[in-house]
Length: 473
Ligand code: BGP
Image (tube, rainbow, N blue to C red; front, side):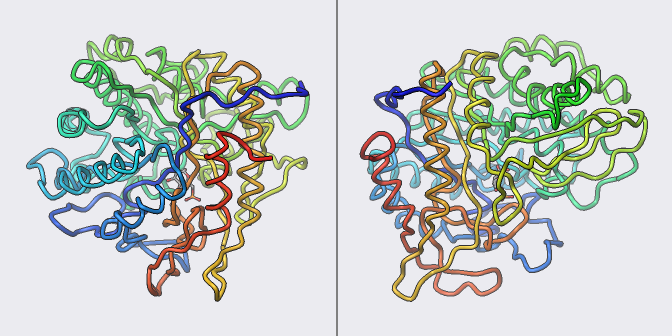
């Protein structure tokens, strides 16, 4: 469907930008913060740095928020570091952690920027990880307590909340992202992973219910990574593979967060492997009782698969990263999509897939949609005069915003767009070389240089988009 005219973006559309605590803050063990599972990492892909200083946002947040204000952001999506607020995950609250986020939220509000707060973005407190992490049901209680503390402390100032960032990627690609810990047992990790998945779903359900009980005016939703899955050919078995992988990668997570039930195809896949989680009395009732107010999702690319003809009992090979898929015996294997270009880091670029993803999510759930991540990772160059010419990022964002407007014209209710990332930060596994921000941070992998901030060309361009409430002519 190619329209001659597109509907405008709604009034009050949340033009935003995203970050996550461990990737931007630094100060990993400062002012009482406890370590998280990310700080336990000792191995990083060659040539990439750790997260100790990151973008030093912890010390420079006032300067950063001033730049967000200058860019015109209507909202800013960030995550709270659980172990900054509760250093060991379920014990004493760290007043300096609370103070940091109170100051950050106050600073945002003073610039008219709506905070959108993610409860948990990959950085489980190390102390909980050492006690079994998400395999241990006690982590569910710890998460609910942590969420209630945030609602209590910040509920007056924060209306929009997100539960767990990319739970699906922690289950499918935890090794690449660095959330599974380096000490896990590799013999058959999947059974345990799907047990963890079940516990995370229960934890998120408890947080949804707690928010609705404590702050009836506030809103919360899940934030998985959704990549619509195409079949490599029109062969029915390839179509079936795409349908199965859509269920395993995407719908399992959203069906649970919205409808409070396991997706049937994904459940059949778990049963066939003997990976179905152990449940306790009341689990299914709790899951069914929790309601999402909107669906937030991160979108970088579509995915293409073909049928895998082995038996499902053969051992699964290890996965690639978030957007590179994995071959799954008896289900699917990833295929290149020859119709798509790739970023410098090998991720396919698919704006039409973005529109299809909107339509599919909307038709399945009929809840307002909030894009919590979308963007282009690239190695930018800081020129001698302080400029950064990132026209490739502008092209990526422009074409995705256009596709989003087409989806709005298709009838999809979209409430906001929060590209990754508001400012340069450290990627999950490609260091700072893979930059996403509108604002350049002067550092490289191992040389921290000045850490000064510079506005990229995309900064000025996004400023005009926000001013125009849509793509400028
Ligand atoms: C998502 C994560 C983010 C982010 C982004 C880009 O999976 O939610 O934390 O980093 O992808 O990925 P990467 O950093 O691997 O390029």
